[in-house]
Image (cartoon, rainbow, N blue to C red):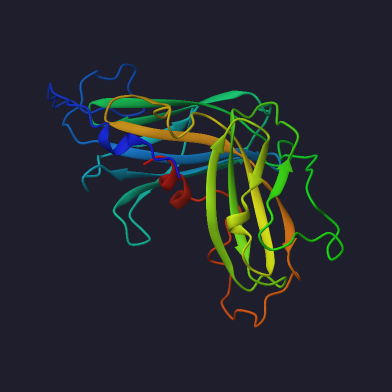
Length: 275
């Protein structure tokens, strides 16, 4: 998996100001009050007519910067500190999308004591921007792939996506009672080969394709300004199943797969991408 060097991108910030900055200020001071930095990980999309956004701000070297408020365009987001055993800011937003549509750009603004940071995000529609036209072995149980064979998978391009995150999970029986995330790729092309080395057990492989607008993990993020670095992206997803061998493992694993199933992008998976 590619690694982004965001954790090594700490910038020396000087010029300490006593004056704070909030979303009500007409002008915000250009110098931060302290050199603390945080990493932003977030995702948003239009889903069923609602504009949804969620994310997290974690600290570099364990120091989480103070955040006064966050706006999506002109609307305040929900913001709270802590939760899930980690020191971090959690933010989310869910309101009617109105006239916003796939391909439109919104701005997220972070207000901190003495500093601001922004992100420009091109929206994807969670339903309309799912990948379609998959080409792969189908019609289980008649079209199965032999253990040790590779699988070529392709799909139609999503017009407003900048790249695709492709994740491969291996299910050890057709009931889906155990899943193991094997591989994750970042690419701009609309095809991939599931390597034979992954297809080593009766069961099925599920290929998740996430169209994403925003910077790739090796492009440095899209947060500009002070104190914060990281990325807010917009995404959708679709997945396919390709059965391997007999399609069922024996004996079946008793392990519940729900905690390992990739499904929609999570904060943990975004952090894996961008650090």
